[in-house]
Structures are given as C-alpha cells and as structure tokens.
Length: 386
Ligand code: F3S
Image (cartoon, protein in one colour):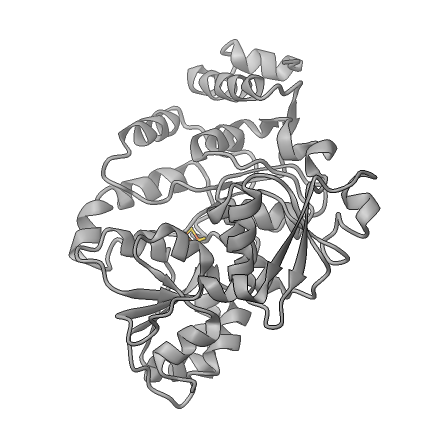
C-alpha cells in the first residue's frame, strides 16, 4: 500500500509504539482487501460499548491506548449501552461496563450512546469518507446520506479514530457502490422492517436497488437495520429516493441488474408470527427510536393502559427531549417502560427466555426465540389498538 510521509513516520514509531501498532493494523487490514492507499476520515462511530465480562483482548487494547494518552483526532461517537442495571444477570454479564465507558470517554469519544448516531450526534454529508462500525448505522450513512464507509469492526475503527485515516477499498470506491440486484415490490401494505429482513436474506452482501417507494426516514432506518442483520448488506438504493439512485442507468452504472427479485405481500406477511396472543413483552426500537418515531407510535398509547409489558428503546438524546413533552407522562401512565439502551444486549442474557414480540427485524434476527409482528400487530399485542 502506498503511504504518505506522515503515515510512514507513524508506522516507524515517530508518534509512539501504540500509534505505530494502530497504523500497522490499518495497513494490514487494507492490504488484505487490496487497498491502494489510506484516506482521511471525517468521523468514526464505534460499536464495542457492551462491557461484557469476557472481552479481555479488547480491554487490553483500550488500556494500552489510554496508558499512551492517545485521543481520537476526528469526531467519534459510541453505540448504545447494554442495560447493565436492568437485571441481576446483566449486572454480572456487563461487569466491565463502567471501566469500558471510562476508557472510551478518556480517548475522547462522544458519550452519545446510540446506534442512531446520525440523529444529531454524528451527521455525515454526501461523499464523506467514514470509518464506522455498527451495521445499521453503516447502512444509513451509505444508503440514505450518501457517505462512504465499510462495515468495520470496533478495533479497526478505534485505530481509524486515533490516526484519522482508513484504507480505501470496498464501499469507499465508486465501483463497489453500484446496484447489483433489482428488487420489485408487489406489496399493498408496506412493512419496511419485514421488507429489509427479506431483502437481506435474499441478496446477502450484494447491493440491492429497490424500486421507487416513498419510504420515510424512520422506515429507511428500520429497513436498513433489518437488512444489515439478516444479510451482510452495507448499502442499498431506492430508485428516485436515495442520493445515488436518480435513475436505473446511474445506479446500475449503465449495466443490467445481475438479478431481479420480487417481494410480495405474502412474503411480508409470512414473517409475522401466527401466535400473537399475550407475549410476555413487546419491544419497539432497534435501531433505537428517534423522537419523531416515539411521537408517531406514542400517540396510540395516550389515555390507554398496556395489557402486556411494553418497551420503547430510544436514542438517549431523543428520550431527554421526550421527557420535556406531555407525551412522556402519557406513555408512563399507559405503563410503557422507556429505556435508552440496546434491547438485544439488555435481553440476551436473561435466564428463562421470555416470549418477546417485536416489530424490529434486527431484534427478531438477533434475539433467539423472539417473534416478529408488524407495528400494528405489536400495538395490538400491547392492548392499545383493536
Ligand atoms: Fe442498535 Fe442494539 Fe439494535 S445497537 S440496532 S439497538 S441491536
């Protein structure tokens, strides 16, 4: 890989041993993927915010960086907390939470603690090169905002955060961003999260181009999260809606789609659980809910009482804003438990799995035994709509 003078100096120890290790790691990573050079990044977003008791190697790297006094050199945001205080089991599983947060904040990361970092905390623009980990955020940045990032791991991204650069390959390059699979819709009632899940399963790690549909920002977030979990998709396009898909010719680079697939209403409905009666818990918000999403769903709960425990999992800053709103009191009175953590982490370590129903394709994918329901199914199971 071609390195500039500064990068070569860092590798040779000019900025200390820990920095040299970080730069060498990035070079090795880039060379494995055929990168020709390093490029500067505008921001980083780190996963790796669950202080799981057994992540020893990860903590050792962070300890080395903090001992060397390293700091991030670009804006760097953090994924959600795991809900360490939510149960006795979680307290044990996430025993390292406090120390992990101390280390991440001591290297200068922004304590936003959200996977929806692009909702105010870290908002990239079209063409910005990033080094983000967290598949749902990578999806949104690439697809909806037109920024450019690979799906990195947290250790790779920490190296980018302290050096300010990333190897140029994959989704940073024009040719990897073109559409590959055309997705036609034969759908009467849109369920964006289910659609994302099915597309992820079928296209795996290729770049899908969905025919035009007027998805909202909330739908794009939830669809992308599900697509990135059920498959390895890091970038999708929606014809006439997302920034790199003004028309077929542009998005497919003048070539024909390698494959065309159709998602039908039956496909979407097939994902919904047939057993919606009385789950133990209904969960909304994975990726975490924005303020607008909480307001949109929240009005169904006003003046009602939930008949089964119901969670809203929100972006922490959005929850702080909601607390100022009259709707917050209504949700609490309705019996909704409002959290600002990651529900997958919070619920994964529970002993004796509960029967959990969710409208999140991502939570459905990751939480063993969870059932999927449309938003309406979930509201109905909570007892607030007929
Ligand atoms: Fe976010 Fe946790 Fe879901 S990180 S996307 S709430 S799995």
